[in-house]
Image 1 (spheres, each protein chain N blue to C red):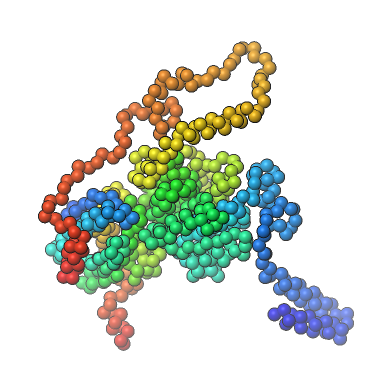
Image 2 (cartoon, rainbow over the protein chains, first blue to last red; image 1 turned 90 degrees about the vertical axis):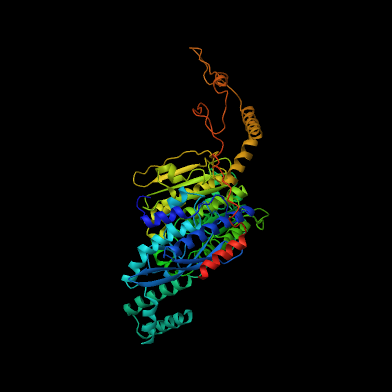
Amino acid sequence: METWDPNTKSALTQIPLLTTRAGPRDGAAWTQRLKEEYRALIAYTAMNKSNDNDWFRISASDAAGTRWTGKCWYVHNLRRYEFDLQFDVPVTYPSTAPEIELPQLDGKTHKMYRGGKICLTVHFKPLWAKNCPRFGLAHALCLGLAPWLAAEVPVLVDSGMVKHKDDTASSAES
Amino acid sequence: MEEEMKAMLDQIESLKHSLPNNTAIADLQRHAERIAGLEKCVPTRRSKVKDMSAEVVDSNPYSRLMALQRMGIVHNYERIRDFSVAIVGIGGVGSVAAEMLTRCGIGRLLLYDYDTVELANMNRLFFRPDQVGMTKTDAAVQTLKDINPDVVLESYSLNITTVKGFEVFMESLTNKKFHGSGVDLVLSCVDNYEARMVVNQACNELKQTWMESGVSEDAVSGHIQLLIPGETACFACAPPLVVASGVDERTLKREGVCAASLPTTMGVVAGLLVQNALKFLLNFGNVSPYLGYNALKDYFPTMEMRPNPQCSNLACLERQKEYDLAKPAREAAAKAKMEAESSSMIEYPVHIDNEWNISVVDDMEADISTSSKSTVSIPDGLVHELPSADGFQKPAFFEESSSTVDDLDDLKKQLEALNAE
């Protein structure tokens, strides 16, 4: 943890930890886990808003809470870059972490697996494994996706792989 | 094409008659005839073979395999047609394993992968550049059905880690459409920790024996491992890489994020995997519980791994319990088999003279006093120094204060309200 910046660290300590070890195939135990997931996501979203660091929207797109969709954004050089965000809760959750996908960036960076799955292998997976089952979806966003965006979006923008939506709109008009 | 070729040959023939004794025309005629001959032999596809025959003729695709019986290696090779093998991950190892089993005449192959063929896969065996863009499972079926039309091929292009994909995976492993039996062996040829954990979960729940395989991201080492739920370590008990090298399995990079790969290492690992699978299915030789391959030193370590009594996988713990309960029956069966074998053999003294009166004494009696506390999980002769803990220490469970919301719909609404702001 010594490599994490103090903001991420303090945010992390404020996200409620989870206790139920249950995946989407575990019936009532999964409902219990899902409640804990919601509590953590609510706390994290509220905290981000109060710290003026709001950076994602996420909600379950099925009743069982196994597929999640939303948006995430990153501000680089005072411009906001927004991406679709989606992931499935794997059947072996929480032993294995969800594979977070940014489908619009598929093929634009090699820090990604096919289908737009961001690479979490080095910076996040070991941390998830050590903290199973206490980490949940909110932690995956905080420690998995947020640092990935911070590292990759500036590179993608500077290299021209990602264009701001205002620029693409104006270039299409002209 | 064929008619044009014929017309051209006729033209040359007439030219030859009008200009007799011209060597250039004779050469041209020979050349054209050779091309016409090549043209004819391209699209032959072999038809299905009803029974495997041991007859040694050039046209029998199974003569060399059936010779395994004559050589005394395999008792009944033809049984291979009754077996179903599921291969999860049709990449550098899985596709080659599928081809090997197809050429061996396996009864049925189930192929699982969600990926498509890319040009970046061409440094490995099996897939061809003209298959780029096809799903790996469909491309594999295309090639395999031409190699051996006797094999029943099932293609599943899906991601087994999702809830839906997992349901289809489990259903396909258990359905008994083929000869009234399910799958005999699952081969895991995937390239990531998540998918291995999913195969592990499915096999632990179904009591399905499986074999795991892997190639390191630097492409110079690999391993295969036999997993029998309850009897040997499951993948969650002890991930093989931790055991082999002390590296945490979860930090493994996958193909996509530029891991190295070699057709040689992948071919070797696929060969080791299918060899072990054949030994397991056809009941010959010793089936390796774990076999490593270090390409730099040509070192092949083997070992055995017992299940972890504190495994985090609940299905694994259940299988372990069942295996322990079946212990007396298993031992009785083994004893009966030993006795049957020894009674069928005629005993005669190994040495006629015994000048020093040497005799072999059973050491069981001496053992009983020392190993009064017999434990199942460690080999004979070893004793635990510290008292065993049977489960994780449960963390002190603190009750949520009554003010927190405990209704899923309310929690959903709360998050949506935050999202809408």
